[in-house]
Amino acid sequence: MFHLILAALLLSYSPPQDVRVAVWSTGTPDTETYESFAFWIKSGKRAYIRYQHGTSPDDIELRWIGPGTVSSRRGFWAAFPVPDSRTIFIAPIDDSTLLVSTHGHNKKYHWENENADRDSDCDICPDDATEATGWLRRYFWN
Image (cartoon, rainbow, N blue to C red; front, side):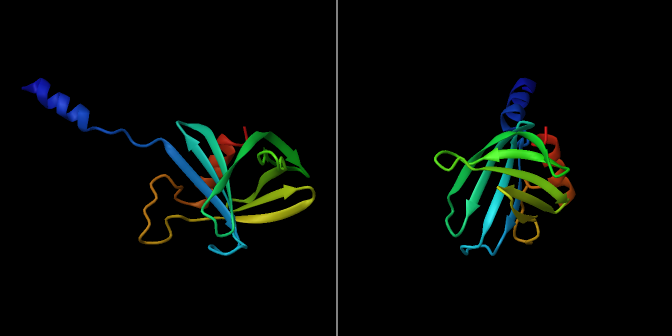
């Protein structure tokens, strides 16, 4: 009998998901001014950088190039896929703001608090901006 109970417990157990995502954006959602970067972490490792623009739900996966420093700011480089192949430099200004630079053009992106809405319960999102930026430093700056 004990073996049946143990087997039932083991089969019903599902380990916590080891997936995390932190999002920074600029502009107004559901308009052409909206842009976002989503930084995905899976199994304790850097997984994806996803870029979304405008009203389309489609996003683009960027390629992580590596860490770097520009104008005394520590951050990392990423590249858009071919045929664009544009490279960008991503660095924190503070815990809630990222600076994204490409060819001398800078744009600020602000952390999206996915849990701010009482109806939202994002278990894979950071609790606050400090945690979100900490994830970037740990998984993307290295």
